[in-house]
Image (cartoon, rainbow, N blue to C red; front, side, top):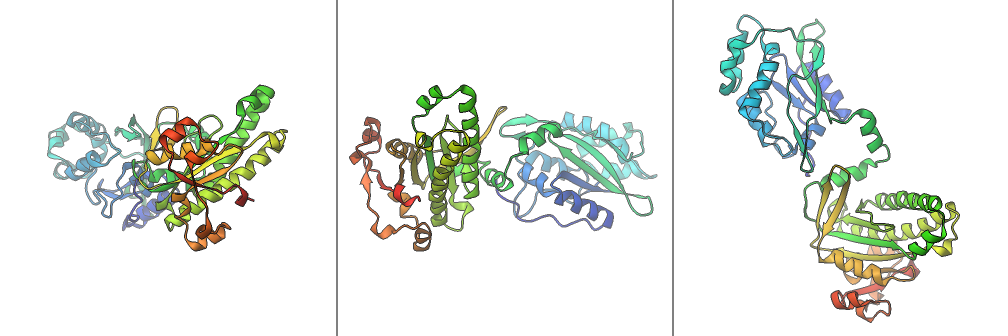
Amino acid sequence: MEPLAETLPLPDAPELAACASTLNNAGYWAYLLDADWRIVFATDELRLSLGDTGATTSAPIGKHWFSVDALSHFASVQAAVALSIDAWRENFIASGPYMLAGPDGRESLRRDIDPALSDLVDQLHPRDRPQIMPSPFSAAMMFGGARSIPSSIWLRIDDDRGQIAGTAIILKPAAGMSELAAAAATADLAHLERMRLVQRPDRRPAAILIADLEASSPLARRLSTAQYFAFGRRWVRVADECVIDEGGIVGRHAGDGVVAFFLAQTYVSESAAAKSCIAAARALRQALTEVAVRSEIPAADVSLRFGLNWGATLYVGRILTGGRSEVTALGDEVNETARIEACAIGGRILASKALIERLDQADAQALGLNTGRASYTPLADLRTADDKTRRDAPAIAVCDLTNSAS
């Protein structure tokens, strides 16, 4: 998902401007309507969730909530579920009574709304706008291909004379706050932002890191289930921290393995992405030793195999289901990275020539590497290469960075 070009201008009315600024800065989903039910603001988070992120917003600022432009907007944004005209009519019947005001209320409303709703105006009976109420309007949003109906409230906004200045329509996901808080409690906000960037799958050049714990099965058999679970939980948490701290995106977890992507678009250069990938591998190596000590496991009993590679044509995206949220990537380079990792027996860090030669001189020096004198070996020539590697990726040239990882 692309980032917002910019925040919308605040409404002219000071009461609405203050409310819009507060809701926006607090990260709420919200629309602000003026006293005549015209849309005057949409918060950044709402626009991001709806996919309304272009240089020019499609939000119909200045248009009535039930206008032709508003209905067209709600039907066009990526995360909206298009409502049938019958559904719009039901929503209008529920909301319209609050929109009648003054002697010319009916005719004014009729002029502002979509003509497909105008025959309903005479059926409405005026109702005072309460200070707060559950939204009489219902619509659904789409996230990761799943349909969800958010909950919402309408808050009346008064000016300093007690006159109605407008309405704030505040929305939230259907899940309760305790569930949302539990899901987000340990989340890193910068990492969430990077995951948002890959909400829509696309080609994204990136450095790839795949690591796996060696001899984990014998270790699991030797330790009690409780001790091994505690070790595994600590390891997963620390491994994710190492990736996140280097600006990467955590990929899928499979057993004791670690997969991470360092997208070029989130760094100043491809060199910086490659540098972070190598730095993360070093941090992971050190972290495993510390986790083993905390788990009362001899450090000599645990080691990681590392495969590092550059993916120029990776297809990266986010998968959201009812039970998980993860980032994954497809492409030949992912399979090649897995073959590199499989050859790194003995706790080695093997990095492809494609990755090493992405480093500029400054980043290489910062890592303590001399890329001009690097020595490479085709995977097929490694004594640790298995038959699958010799068949699928024999010519991938790698450099052993193990001794530089101190």
